[in-house]
Length: 118
Image (cartoon, rainbow, N blue to C red; front, side):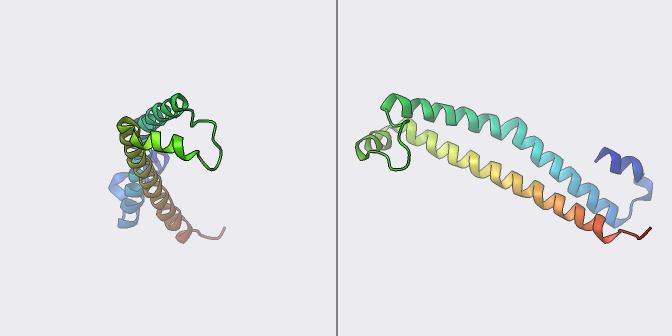
């Protein structure tokens, strides 16, 4: 983004340049939000969930979980709250990644549209 802004001074920006800078800024902000806020919280919640699963003995199950252990986890209010919070954070992370990806695709589309043969 800095390189683009240095190569294209703000005084000479066209509508196309403004859209590209906006895309790059949105990408930077969504990635930064994900890196600084969402992912650390999601990792913390996931570790807390895994700790509860280990305490209940459901951490070594691959594939199908023992129904008795699953019932114990479903009745644990703290585990259920952590699962909901993790789901929300995971969804927010996915949305943030999709916004960043869409911004990058739009920026690349503008770059490709302005390619000139040598």
